[in-house]
Length: 400
Ligand code: ZN
Image (cartoon, rainbow, N blue to C red; front, side, top):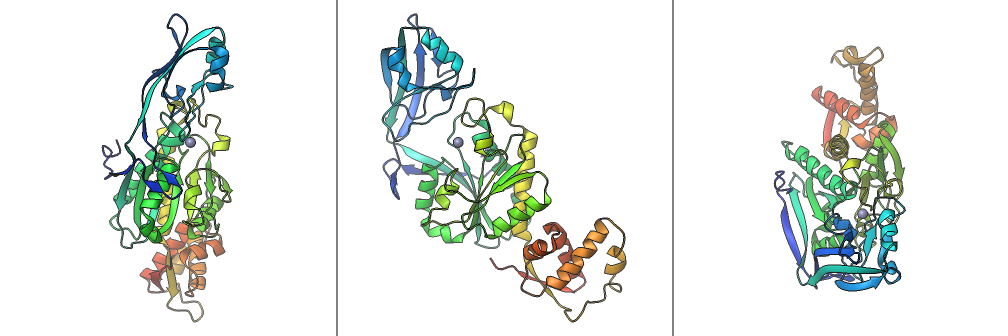
């Protein structure tokens, strides 16, 4: 589907049985049908109504059971109609996910027909990659998981956001950095990708894990393990200036695939961008995480925020003041009259110009000037460009 949206996605297959660090790629799981039916054959829980009704990875079963025998295999929700999403991969078991209403219905019956028509066979783990090369080999890794069937916010919204950002970057005439978009199953997919690409990890400048980006909440950021990488500083700046940002959290070793990137042997700076966090999202890992909780507008807004962050990495530079002996005369250059007085954006730009000239001592990049001045990053970039046009600033490449 991503190819239909003009993403140049190439798929890679990692065969079952391949060793990936401490893990092994499992066999592929296929399911054709599953249900719990009453004595008359009436289905009370039906995989065909929702594929989330079966614990993903369930081994086959075909049995007549009492309710009490079945009970240990039921994962019931507190919610009247929604049911949970569960996986049992890497365990030789099975289960059903049901709503409270379905639990009550099952309790009415003494004998229940339980069937899961599934199988495991040798196959492969599949992930997709889309590359956007830039002037530098330094690469931003854009990461989304693709393994949760039928979940909208905790899956599809991340994929859709990444696809939008891909298009925005692809439209740029030039890019300073290279971008590598990966669409992979969570956990085992990240472990597989990292083990298959170990020799390319040095090129990764930072990674962004994208998920939960379609709901109505404000944005929540999770910083990298070190907490002081370039991308952490960008996230803090955006939080300072953008009211849509709700919270910013230090790294912890739970959550999404940032866990794998941040393991001590890998140690890639990986930040996470969500709207709701999993803890704040009531529909997290339930059938309630459906199209009703996400919207196109929110996904587009998420893509635009992610793109702004990437632009900070693209536009960051080291400005050097070419006239550093006292203040240069701004008036004759039209810089004072144009921006020198009055409230408004013009005054703001004037302040940005003063800060930029002052801190363009070769020790402050645009990001550091924005941090020190408290002015938004794009205002500083604008000031640098104006001053460069007048020969007062020489732009050098910001060190990575
Ligand atoms: Zn999830």
